[in-house]
Image (tube, rainbow, N blue to C red; front, top):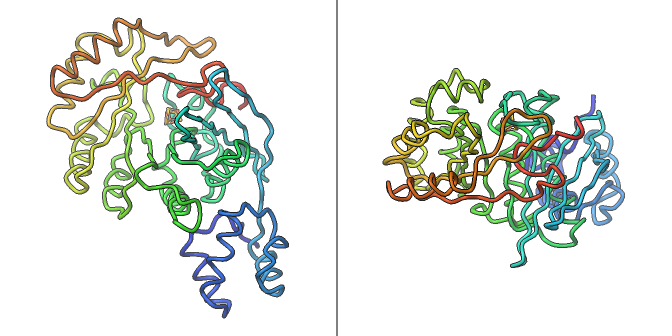
Length: 341
Ligand code: SF4
């Protein structure tokens, strides 16, 4: 049985090259061909010995995704649907900024098993984990389509990255490597719905990757209703894991809180959020909910968003209203997969 090259981490490639009796620098050459120069076949790797190319192409074939859909938003963001060899799909969004930055929102899984009630991906269920190279394929594709270097990555597309921890971290190391995609670790954010084991592992990683946590409710009964996939992990447990993270890294993380009318927007919810955030090194991003066709979840008014932000700030918790982009192409948070899967 062959193994896809895209399943390999940097360390795996180095090990295989050495085991094949080849000098270690050959690993760097192959990785660079695939992830820095975007080679789609071993034939393109002209500075590698022919025998080595043949050996790798047989044992570790290079599978490339097909782009099956692309939509361009009025705000210039672009959403793509990539299809892998086995039919698994992944959505990715490229978000250019006027200051020259290009951010990519990547998926870590095809679909998602977390069943968040307000999320289109959650409704579709999990197809499978994405391989490290399949996560990187999304970045490379956006880079090629925009003809511009990607400067920021957020793992905030489809899937729960900590449910695919090893592959996600392997991908981020390829993205961060100075000779590969060279994207600064501080410009890479992983967004979890709060898997505590993953948060504790992430705290021990040597890179300066940043962390975002989809909280969406600081009252247990509300969170259990809208995020049933994490219901067995209590909010107290999540807070302890986050405290551990900030103590171990000295870094601030952010909470994402999508305000939904009559669901998590009461004064009681706000009080709970303020006390949950107290003495935690965090920033709160208040997110105006995106309308999903036929969804029972509705956005709140601008006044409510502002009230929440002010109240948090007054309590000493930094907070920002984060406006979504790409809403017209279903590319914004919670909208991925709404049209395809
Ligand atoms: S919000 Fe994130 S974790 Fe929840 S179902 Fe959607 S993709 Fe999965």
